[in-house]
Amino acid sequence: MQRRNLLKMAAVAGGMSVLTERARKAEAQVARATRGMPSPKIKDVQVIAAQVHQIPFAGEPPDAAGTSTVRLSVVKIITDQDGLYGYGCSTFTQRGELVNAAVEKYLKPFLMGKPTDRIDDLWQACYNSSYWRNGPVLNVAIGGVDQALWDIKGRQAGMPVYQLLGGKCREAADTYVHVTAPDLRRVLEDAKRAVKEQGFRNILLNPGYQTPGPSLRDGAVGTGDLGTNSIFDSELFARRSLQYMEAFRKELGDEVGLMVDIHERLAPNKAVQLAKDMEKLKLFFVEDLLSPEDIAYFRQIRQQCATPLAMGELFNSPHEWTPLIQDRLIDYMRMHVSQMGGLTPARKAAALGEILGVRTAWHGPPDTSPVGMAAQLHLDLACYNFGIQEFTFFSDQAKEIFRGCPEVKNGYMYANDLPGWGMEIDEKLAAKYPYGTDEQGDRQRLNGGWGELRRRDGTIVKQ
Ligand SMILES: [Mg+2]
Image 1 (cartoon, rainbow, N blue to C red):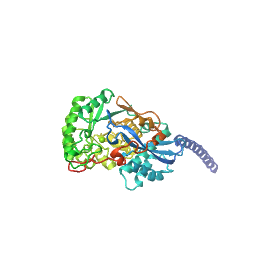
Image 2 (image 1 turned 30 degrees about the horizontal axis):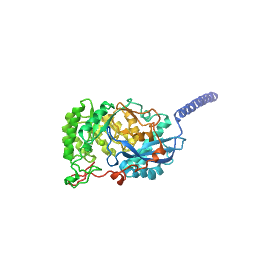
Image 3 (image 1 turned 90 degrees about the vertical axis):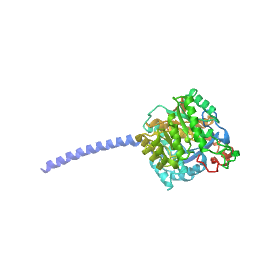
Image 4 (image 1 turned 135 degrees about the vertical axis):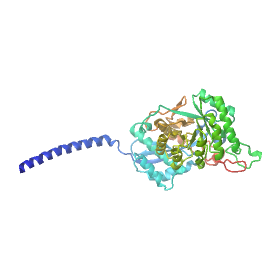
């Protein structure tokens, strides 16, 4: 009996050792398969800042007050692994030097030595490290870091970032371009050229550029917008916006997608009225019909007309975009991806929008670096609820500095298939154009900042 028990125990022990060996091998196999590359650590955080030529609009770019150049800022994160680094857009033209200092003096010491592969964790750490959060300067600084980390992850994986987001939902992103000129006839000519010669299917008009308002010399006490020597007349602006969009629809036909940017320049009740008046024009969307301070009025507009609404370029905080998305009060979220804190919060907002039927139309003005435009494009390609992408042309100088810029053909923007954002920066060339290069007038005096816009009686206007 005792011997039988001993034999049984020996057999069990033998079986266990076989099992243990098998388990050990299996565990080792799993560990090998899931180990990936060693975790890169942050070795340096740098800012690349340059004043670069811009082509803001289709047609002739305006040349007043030094608007033909723009201050761009990009974060570069260098890892401890040979040749592994990444870029992220941190451009905030009006307060560029503050953002650069936020990156170099606060985020850099905080990030040194941390692993680059924990992107969401690092985002939360940076976001909470200042205690006060959701401000534009700190957000875009974090946005630059965040995008650089995604670039690094893509380079590590040998894949474009859109692959890390699940892969393409579409081959290219449909775009719209701005047209501007001093008068309606030339604006219409530019729009027709953009459609017929360049293949764009969607056009945005910013009637503010065609509505300078009465001259200061006409006895107004207000101070003029940058270089225009004029005041702002909201009644005239509302009338012109409607008249111009009527002319656009008539001249360009029903096939072209039309957008209008109201730039938050109307009182809420005027905005409600304008949305109703524009309903018949079947626009693609009306942009920034209200200022962020007045977004509660979207509910009224929604109840009164079906004009599609796009909002978000001035948003910094999820407290601003979440209510509009969850209550389906807008049709397009158009936050500035760098400004809202980078790809990490943008993809979360996009996912929320997908559930609730709100599409993306990320902000893509001239004051987005090509790196920032690429980050938006990768989201466009990977998000099912993509709506449209705002596009502004890259100057030849920008394309020399930023190699691998997204390309637009026939109105569609394409990403290259290189890892990360697929971009490299000629840092030596960028260093030749520090902030202030070729900057003139008030823009130079204000260190890249905007001026002021006032009503006839001298009241400041949101711009
Ligand atoms: Mg806008």
